[in-house]
Image (cartoon, rainbow, N blue to C red):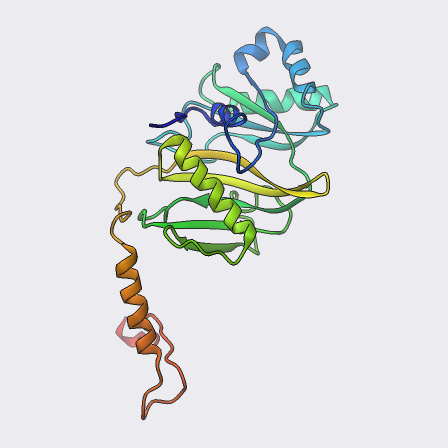
Length: 266
């Protein structure tokens, strides 16, 4: 039985603050356009409790991150907002609020994560067909958004079969352990998780920046279609085909997808 239920982006992070053990969640303040209009000063006072120099202000609408629609990027998020500039802060709060359809939609305010060493997004399955592989997309250029906004020029992708227990990279192992913990908390094996490693007090810490369910509507579901035994048989066959053969050049076979296709036949 699930310990947590999926709610808004902000509520998910708030609920994880006291539950999550494999990663940290940044401090947060939740507000809305309704609250801004009725008590602007209180909202600003609450934000000052974050004790941050710069802030990220994110949308957290009921219209995004649901089981049926992700609406990723549909609403505004603004980064590197100066916490000590009232005008800049209010302008950003209202811009994010007005990008969402309802006055009661939440505005999520958090400190900007600094000293990032690795940042990206992880899926608990292949997001296109739900085959049983953890899929991590990340880069190590210090950005907090280059993967999610598509601007990364040094992105890396890592696939890891769910039942394979060996890891070569401790950081990737920690990310997958985080995803597994979230699967248990939400009783859901189809997750989309944003994460980052950052230096805090001279130590590298893992942060969970967002979690939401993968939208499964009208997609093939191969989650139970690739048992470990079948993959092992394929692996043995593949290794056999790689062996050198008489009257064939080279010590090992090279495989490709139609490498000798004749362009004239297209």
